Amino acid sequence: MALWGGRFSSGPDHAFKQFNDSLPFDYQMAEEDIIGSIAWAGALQQVDVLTAQEHQQLVTGLNELLLEVQQNPNAIATAGDEDIHSYVEAKLIEKVGDLGKKLHTGRSRNDQVATDFRLWSRKTVKQLLAAIASLKDALVTLAEKEFGTVLPGYTHLQRAQPVLFSHWCMAYFEMLERDEARLESALSRINVCPLGSGALAGTAYAIDREQLAVNLGFDRASRNSLDAVSDRDFVVELLSCASISMMHLSRLAEDMIFYNSGEAGFIELADSVTSGSSLMPQKKNPDALELIRGKTGRVFGAFSAMMMTLKALPLAYNKDMQEDKEGLFDAMPTWLACIHMAEACIKGVKVNAEKTKAAAQGGHANATELADYLVAKGIPFREGHHIVGELVQVAISEGKNLEDLSIAQFKAVCDVIDEDVYPVLELQACLDARLALGGTSPTQVQLAISNAKKNAEFTVRDATLNDVEAIAELIQYWAREGENLPRAKSDMIHSINEFAVTEVNGKVTGCASLYIYDTGLAEIRSLGVNPESSVKGQGRALVNHLIEKGAKLALGRIIVLTRVPGFFTKLGFADSHKSQLPEKVMKDCELCLRKDNCDEVAMDYRIARPNELRIECRNVA
Image 1 (cartoon, rainbow, N blue to C red):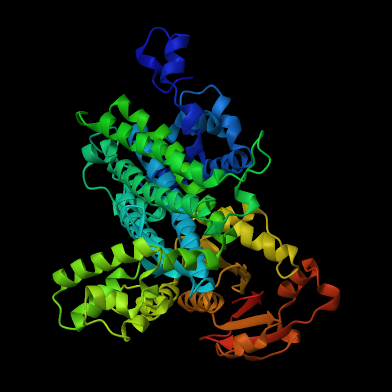
Image 2 (cartoon, rainbow, N blue to C red):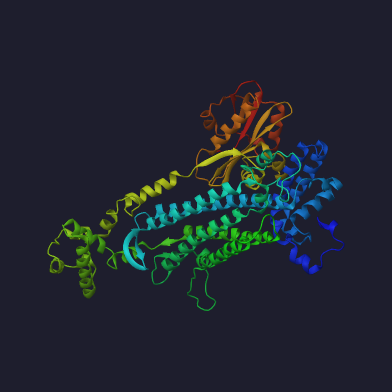
């Protein structure tokens, strides 16, 4: 049943329903709609619209629905409801009866969709930030691997001056740094909560909107209800970020396509990112890079379309805004896929250093160094520039490089040139001379690489529902390794407030949870760090974060069972014994794969009072 049918004596015809319905694409916000609804239920309880029992029933039903949509999200698209809000409400009513109809009290689909869309965008931005960080790492790794490889630098697609191949890598690293900074800045403006703005005038209930914003992980609540429900700046900004970044990826693709060509032969792409010809068996086509280049137009188109849609809309919400989603839902995954594919191309590339060096030595790329040599001899640059031009003509007529001309040939054009010119014209000398900050000298390129590696940092924070998938992957990985106890995803959802995570460039890379038993006994569970993360100190930060949390909760004694006692010794833990562990904690060991061959040792840490807190530590970094 439609959410708005009471005003109408008949329903929409089939053609209009198909034209009007958004469920075939906004189903992608199912999780966000449920998460927002859970928070709204809490807000309604606080203003006595819902009793504690009603609140609990709704939250239980919504959590059940959350698990269902996570298991098969694509099935929602064909359910036949008008939009994702209608779908969630209908399914909730099936679970809890008419009580489900109370949930929409004080809320409009206008502030609901604005909230859902911001939650979805925030989650997607974090995925993109993680992908950009990974591509940056790949470029830095390639720069280190090929340090010393010389490449011809180009202007106007003509050989200009020699550069280090690593310098080329770090040029794209700089572009990605800006992409990352733009996205992080956009995230701060996305992370504003419109829920509680109603249809346009605000809600009539005394909702604590700032607390509601906090509960949903937003930085703050929106300040104007008219703006909140009609603001799509964040969509435009995301599409702008995507367009600029895709332009960078397209330039990277174009460079690599040229370098991979038979005419250049500077690099060879991996088989995994190339394809063959159905007719010509010798072909190895750079399809991945060509598709990155091609898909750039698709993202540009979404950006242009969104600007045109919004350009003349009056306040507040208008149905035109339904057009905000399909473009973003297509552009963001396209951008993400292109970042991943660019990383695959970078990781698999083979560089032909002999060919790049030969090309760098050709084309008289050391002409600028010769002009600088003349300046050092007291000749004004403009005059020196002209002299070098004449010498290039001589070299071309002789079929030689500049460094192959004889002293007699040099002096025939300019008599100040002497034997000391030859060291200046050597390829390495050309590189070494570019010593200013940002230049291609080995010293400066090494500095750029070192600075890039130093900037890899992480944060530790309490987890949110947006982190459930990442936490589940970490726990499942270490459970398969026999290092942690497995946990159901439903358990993680219900106990998300117990978790802390570490985050590197927007990607969750470590987790741990603090569980408190009825007796006041606490346990840190599921401690683990992504083994592929190169950022050190995350395990230590997670332990310290949960120790601080335990102290705030007046917990006293921390017990740890670990195979890495040295790690905990550095954190202030002392040797203990398993016999001191409560029986209830030890029962959990029955679930462990290593229970019959346990090699863990017990350690403890005292906080303030004799409550017991056990840390089940597994493979921390």
